[in-house]
Image 1 (cartoon, helix red, strand yellow):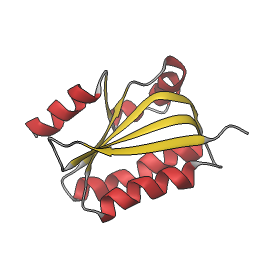
Image 2: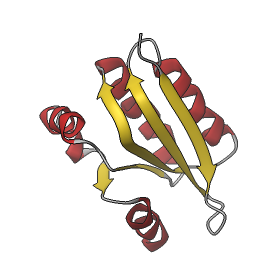
Image 3: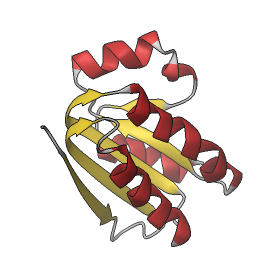
Image 4: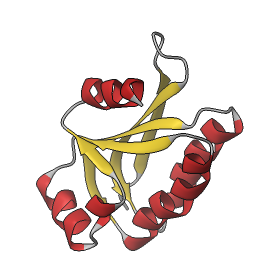
Length: 119
């Protein structure tokens, strides 16, 4: 069964921004690990979060549900989730779900960081 690798990195130049790099499959078996990673950042008062999806092959409804369930609390604390480097298959579902109305996507972490610094 495919799994999920999660790496959380804090930007040394921007300590209020964190990057979560995901690899593998984000589904009902792995979504709780992803949720825990986001909630730990929020607990540590980091509300500007970039999710790098470059190495994510699949996101199930349970996985997408984590994004949606966490965004309200993050935005209430003047933060946001920004998504970067989505592969075409994942992007297709993202568009079908009309999540482009909720989340911003970027080609690179650098672009997402710049957007955070503008706001």
